[in-house]
Image (tube, rainbow, N blue to C red; front, side, top):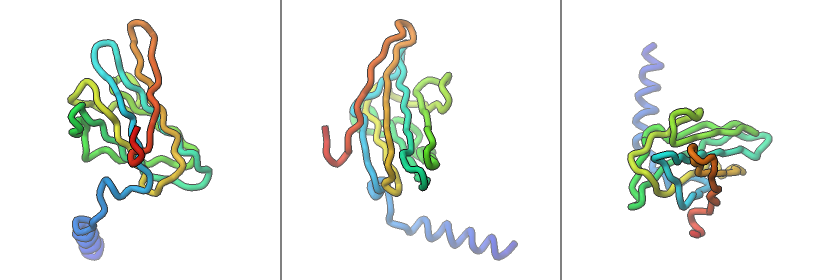
Length: 142
């Protein structure tokens, strides 16, 4: 038990000294617009195109001023090979991500730079209409 405690404390200290951060991920992308509020909500889908490797997906909703408006401590999701993950800004869809703003942009990162297929649809529940928002490489702009 003492060895496990020492190992855990050592890993926590090592993790606090590591210099990797949000910008050090292998693949970086951006959706330039998302919307939530009234009858509108955003639905994000990520598909891991690899048949062999898992990856870690980081996801952050930003407000119109570029400040994070979603939980930045719980923004990490494991995506297995061939798996699809779905996120939404409304609680009735599988993984709800609460936000403090009504619109902005979405940043996403893949830790190992895996082959990821990102999709974003903004949907209106009242009229049953919506539109797709394209994803861009964050470093390349849009």
